[in-house]
Image (cartoon, one colour):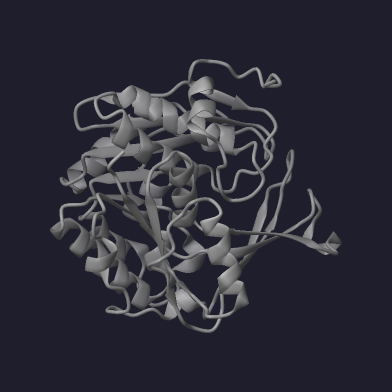
Amino acid sequence: MNQKVVCFGEIMLRLSPVGYQRFTQAHSFDVVYGGGEANVAVSLANYGIPVEYVTRLPKNEIGDACIMSLRQFGVGTSQIVRGGDRMGIYFLEMGTMQRSSKVIYDRAGSSISSIEPGMIDWNKVFDGATWFHWTGITPAISKGLAEVCLEAVKIAKAKGLTVSCDLNYRAKLWKWGKTAQEVMPELVSYADVSIGNEEDAEKVFGIHAPGADITSGKVDGDMYRAVAEALVAKFPNLQQVAITLRGSLSASHNTWSGLLYDRQNVYLAPIHQITHIVDRVGGGDSFGAGLIYGLLTYQNDPQKTLNFAVAASCLKHSIFGDVNLVSVAEVEQLMKGDASGRVSR
């Protein structure tokens, strides 16, 4: 497949108490690496899509270990910039049943937060690429990152790349002086594809689905057609708007589906019952990666594209860690309706 995707953003060291222990019980932590755009890159590499991941990491052994973890999944790392003092960390306490998961960030002063325009040669990075992916987490981290992200999307569009954005609103991160409502509109104006969950458009742009109640455990996809249409009206450049639809019955039991709007039609995916969640972190990223794969592979079949994205992200909930380590064949098996989980011999 003659396609190359570039993903840009922060990757962090994730530390989690073993199993479902609380922070106050922990005597050891499981270590993985993850971040919104890096998670997308790993999924795409698993699907056979050439992918380059761009970030800034400290020039020390922790940065080296992170790069090695990306390489083991087949992600390109040649454009990673080295510098700064530290890698960002986040602590994750895994919730279960009626107890929610908790995240504590320790990412202030990370290497990528001090990045400035001109540090990345975007013309070189985008050489031979056809797609650029970023998320709303990136410009939230610092003024410099917001400026570098704007630099990237402008060059990507000038070079004819398709640009996708996962809105990914994180209220805790917008602390550098401007709000998401001030920064995101200009950045999203360069996007061809918008990805988000049922709350992102409301938190960032004030666009909400009338009558929606995600805490009821039921999410009606038809309610979100208005959200997709409003996003396209606000950003006429958008060619596709995708929305994940999660109904939360408990921390262990969710329903999972999605919506895709292509400026003409709305497509809804089947609803999957996820009755035992192993790890929900990265669920939205795995949806985004599945959507990108589908748009590149099933170019004339929006329904199949959406079904692949939803099935892939459904499977992610069965995998510990941030990244989705499933194959195309496994996703397509679930798309066909085989959710039996029978042993493959």
